[in-house]
Amino acid sequence: MRDVFKILIKDFVSKELPAINAREILLPLNSKKIISVIGARRVGKTYLLFGAIKRLREKYHKSRIVYINFEDDRLFPLSVGKLNDFIEGYYELYPENKRKTVWFFFDEVQNVERWELFIRRIYDNEKCKIFITGSSSKLLTKELAASLRGRTIAYEVFPYSFKEYLNLKNVSIDFYHSETRARIVNLFDKYLFSSAYPEVINATKFEKGKILSEYLNLLIYKDVVERYKIKNLFLIKYLLKFFVTNSASLLSVNKIYNDIKSQGISVSKDAIFQYLEYLQDSFVLFPVTIHSRNLREIQRNPRKIYLLDNGFIDAMEAGKNAGKRFENIAFLEFRRKGKEVSYFKKNGEVDFCVTENRRIELFNAAYSIADRATKEREIKSLLEGMKYFNIKESFLLTNNHEEKLTVDNYEINIMPLWKWLLGK
Image (cartoon, rainbow, N blue to C red):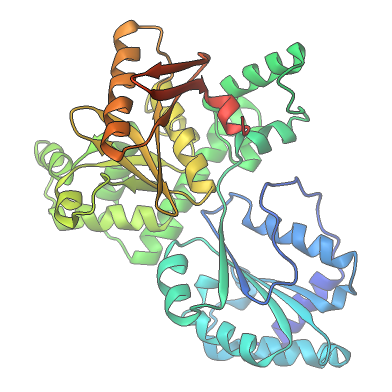
């Protein structure tokens, strides 16, 4: 295996990197921590690494910066015991770097079982900076927490944010130039009703459908079916279609169970819970629970399901519902910012109860509040939430309405979602 690693190392050192589109995440180059980049396949994790490598190459010799993709078929099968061949092979090629700081980038590292043992060893014993990527959320909650506790900083990567989308379209963020503002509003409508995957954004309409179908198959078969050795393909496909169709809605496992049973399909509630966890682990979807300190209350209340990308709705022919897409975009922005998200429900429902450092913010997302009853319902639920949490301000995100309301000394900021996404 050492000779294979030597070939991969030499090939990369001599390789010119592709053009990189700027993302909002800027990875630190000289952190004392292991940098972990986590996210679904094809969201741009590798290109985020390439961006860091390009910046390093401006300062250091190429031989001091090495990238290995653990999905390269030349490395299969690979056990953790063989990973030492990488280190030995590297220093045989470049012995002059032994006393210098070097940078190692390991892509899709979860393909090697017990990989964290190797990463921990070289982190403790070699003069190196380490970057890893993975397409499993367990890297955040299991391997990293257990074996690399205190040694890593994790970054989650998602499809393009609206700000990144505008940058890709070469549109500056200027709210006061009427032509630019109109362009932003027009592009937000396109962003809302399409995929934000990097490869899909500038593809033709025909290509978009093909690419998204391929992505979904890759996520399902590679990251769910193969990883967890699932045999009931019908059930996992059915559940995925069900979750996509009912995204941004309250869903209980009992409802899903009864829906499947009514069609004469044999299934257990445990299987549904398990498959939901698998889809969550692969970043396909994100379940959100009710806001409560009571674990039993959390468990007995339904969850809201959000999707990695609005393009999944089109890929699974799940309708054109603007409201679901609208709410999904807001949720993803909270996740990008590392916020803890739940929903609040008493008499009314608040879409997002966002917690950061014990501070709570309340948000509702409604594509249109032109209907008076809709507007009153959204405001009423926010007022109920503000009184419950004893906070004086909340937000109602809409497609185009902008207004500041004061009701009984409580302030509700009504603003377009696109403006909020851009930091205003």
